[in-house]
Image (cartoon, rainbow, N blue to C red; front, side, top):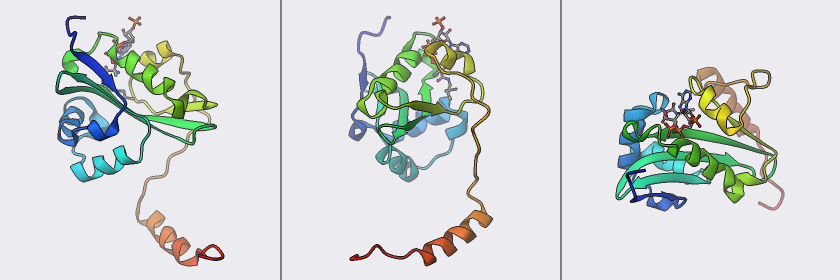
Length: 157
Ligand SMILES: CC(C)(COP(=O)(O)OP(=O)(O)OC[C@H]1O[C@@H](n2cnc3c(N)ncnc32)[C@H](O)[C@@H]1OP(=O)(O)O)[C@@H](O)C(=O)NCCC(=O)NCCS
């Protein structure tokens, strides 16, 4: 590779959210237009958060959420368009899969619209039988409000 200054990081505090926003707007169709505040919430609630840097420039990103033992999900995998095809994407996903929060987990999930072939090369299989999705719409918000009102505090709290 002609970029000896490229390095990987697992330190989420290092993420420049403005560069992350730009990277998503450029290379991640599902994550265009996300606000800085919301990106900060997503990063703060994910582990690991893996980033790739060419010097000071953010050129790759992926994050996961995990219970540490049973299930983990990988989110927001993206390589800057100028840096694709150099095996950075596969190394990025492998780095997420090697992190202690993910490496012992029984099953790792992800959602992808177009990149099945890329993930199959890493070892992922198509899994159409188990996945459902809930969009956070008005109906959902109504039962959420009702459920929160009915929640009893734990004894002693
Ligand atoms: C998908 C993405 C992360 C791949 O990153 P990359 O650095 O270009 O991929 P790599 O160079 O590591 O490729 C690894 C292997 O997958 C193959 N591959 C990569 N993208 C592919 C694609 N879209 N279709 C088929 N094969 C693909 C490569 O040819 C390579 O194969 P090889 O091992 O036989 O040489 C990158 O193209 C990207 O950021 N795309 C836009 C965002 C996106 O769609 N992310 C996934 C969302 S779920």
